[in-house]
Image (cartoon, rainbow, N blue to C red; front, top):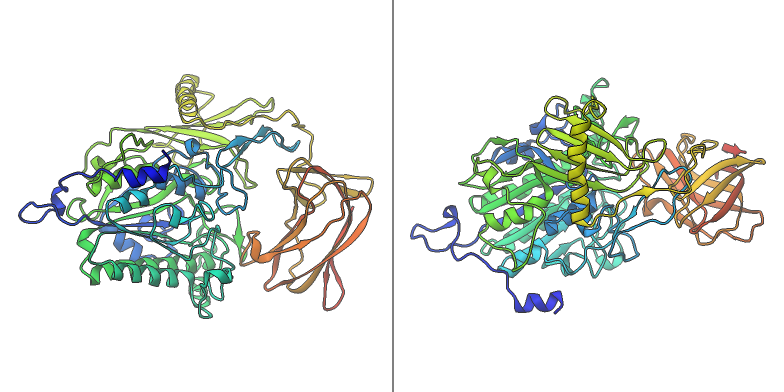
Amino acid sequence: MNRRSMLRKTALAVSSMMAAPWRTAKSAPARRPNVVFILADDLGWRDTAVFGSRFYETPNIDRLVRRGMMFTQAYAANPLCSPTRASIMTGLWPARIGFTAPAGHLAQEVFESSLQPKAAATQKALIAASATRLKHEYFTLAEAFKAAGYRTGHFGKWHLGREPYDPLHHGFDVDVPHWPGPGPAGSYVAPWKFPAALNFTGQPGEHIEDRMASEAVKFIRENKDRPFFLNYWCFSVHSPWDAKQALIEKYRAKADPNHPQRNPVYAAMIESMDDAVGKLVATLDELGLSDHTLIIFLSDNGGVHFAEVEGAAVTSNTPLRAGKATTYEGGTRVPCAVIWPRVVQPGSKSDAIIQSIDFYPTLLEMTGLKPQEGQRFDGISIVPALRGQPLGRDTIFCHFPHDPAVSDATPSTYVRKGDWKLIRFYCDNDDQTDRFELYNLKDDPGETNNLAANMPDRVKELNALIEGFLKESGAIVPAPNPAYKPTAARAAAGWQPSAHCTLSVENGCLRVESTGGDPYLTAGKVPKAQGTLVLRFRMRSTSSGKGQFFWTTRRGPTFGPAMRLDFAPIHDGRWHEYEVPFTAAEILRSIRIDPAAAPGQIEFDWIRLVSADSGNVLQAWEF
């Protein structure tokens, strides 16, 4: 019997009586509480005032958190977005699902993770290829509420798959803007660049979170007389980094150049997100629903520490180490609060160790629902912690079998057991054996003192837990790369390669050896130019596939479809010259050339960046 047939034949089992706070005076079952799940994107552990920021202003989030219980040791199940989102919707480890990278926007449908068969000579490990879709076989959190009679609505970012793996096919009645991408299309401030078919446009200057909040408020008003489950999954504060100009100027005026959190663009983005949260809560208050509504506030991973906007780091997760895309504390420890009126003491705090996999079973218990027959979770209900009792679990895991091109990021798995955390970095020693880092987070939350060499027995004990987790979850584990060469160049002539290629300069040419389907090279240092520009280069190739050119500006330093142009390489092994005209609306930050889409050899004789207006060569790479 397939999953959809099961849904028709098997309604979600529900408890016959509600928890005491939701009963009427006569103890008859009352309407089940509403649920609002607010998920921020890339919001760091200290990126709100209530969690310790002295720069960002978040009065609405601060008031919301103080209505319930703040969790000081809450974790995302993964240091990147899609896997954490999958864990929330299923209550399962991303390792078990196979969704371990932010791949939900990709066109290719992949349902199982696998080990990549090849890697560049610069990589010590063969890494995992993630699933790109949340499979229909999972009975999602939204489907659980829908089966129990809730009206379900999703607003904002999804990133778990295109149709038919979108919210409307995973239990939601409403999905706005029905967009599979990793961020808002084009920008946060309208005009946006959503496909015309979505019929989702905004007035010039309208902020996407203002619009999302308005759409969510409409959903609340339409369903005020029935139980509803509202997923408000913010686009904020993911790239592209842009914001309302007036707010940028406000924070530019108060930024302290000596403080680690000082980026005015990012601060402005946080304020717009805070405004949206305020609109939702104000609407619940106005309609008299607040005392009958459960609210979860969470981020999907840590803050971005590896990029700059307008010359300043996007944010800082200090005192935690590193951030997004790493398995250090800054990558997965996140802000979290749970509001449960008449049960959770307002203004309370908990140091219980909880994880995003826990919210599915927790919300079922909070609303008086039960899992489907045979349904199992990797997470647990944290209701005991919400009631001020011991949680009964002190061990969590995070599996990240990838090697993104950011600092401190290496394929790894960690276990946290009580105050101890062991990180296993795959194939990271010189001989491609695994390397370990051990920290006592109570004494060293910044992970500065690696105790692995001094405490081999503790490493052995915790690594045994990792081994058990990997086996039980069916995780794809990185393996030594047989093509690894310690002398292979990570960069050449000012260009940085992707994981699918290596670079070298030979015989006056920049040689690109492609080992996979996504070879590209990035120049991080380019002239401070803007306006109409032309990239010219002389190239020959024995690879195949289309070519693409990307650029980024100071306001949006992430490569994406809004700043991409295609070109048609001729892969006949002969020299050809190419021109790619483009317009940088603001000061250029970096450029990227994707010369092919398959293994093979590509060579560049020269690359030049030219002003289209004057014809002047702004920068030339001669090899």
